[in-house]
Image (cartoon, rainbow, N blue to C red; front, side):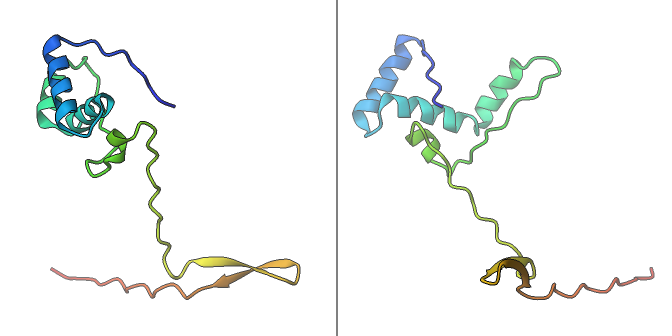
Length: 120
């Protein structure tokens, strides 16, 4: 889903957005998204928000990192999920042709370190 707000701002902002648009390969929507994308990680932005924070409210943290440029570049960006590596000792399921499922361990779990007692 795409959120499409109507943005109303002073002529000074319009002039700036137009000048950035003319001097880059970014469209106006990318420029506005980029400003919000970076502002959410900015100390200056957070400082100003704190002045207007409601009593008892917590300011949200962005769900994106600064290295995820797709959020501001693309209107419908869907981040790629990072694949979590499973430890080598986890069991896997192997389907066999004899009408069943067999659990096949890849490897034994790593040995646990013995607890060491230190006398001080």
